[in-house]
View 1: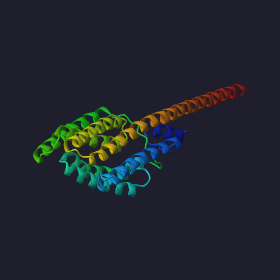
View 2 (view 1 turned 90 degrees about the horizontal axis):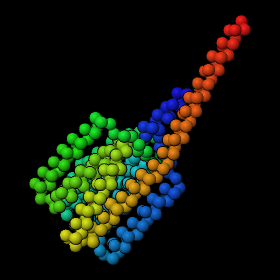
View 3 (view 1 turned 90 degrees about the vertical axis):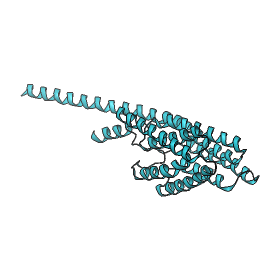
View 4 (view 1 turned 45 degrees about the horizontal axis):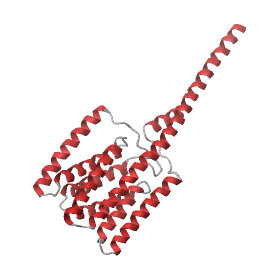
Length: 271
């Protein structure tokens, strides 16, 4: 009884991790393969250097297969952080450059220290509390102010897009670490602003190299939207099954207790 209830509660709190379905695994492989082919084509045509291509490949591996190994995930995180820092510095996107080094690496360390159980797919179902909402909003506002002042001081290009995309990326990473469902909302806005930022860079500098970053963020956007749909479909169904199982277990327990009381009453009458 206690074990079943604990499983039900842990499932509701987002502690239970399930294996990916074969369809979901195939989707990740196809998305990774498609973006890789486009990236290789750009490099072979001489339109893009190796660093953005490495960022594209390692970035997708880091996001798509973050649950395979904590050590590998941390190594991929470091490579992505420094490669992105180099490219952002080149285009004077200093807010984005800073957050990948100063925030993503510490967040990855924190994520590695959490117990997400075994499994590749981390369930994100918890709803953020009212107190955490206030703290989160304060953090978001302070982050925007800090990155804005820093970007202005260093002469960042496209300050508004740079700061907004960087702030939203940090907040989405923080929400994901804590498995809050609001992660998907912030993530979509973060990726849309990030794609917009690099489209502006591509037009401003007439750089095909920026297409590699746009491609990476576009792959992230497709991946996260599909993951949300997959998770909702899989875990909502599983959750309803657990609710049904739990209610049945409670009803059986009540029937058993009433039956014991009835038998005890009849036994006393016979005596």
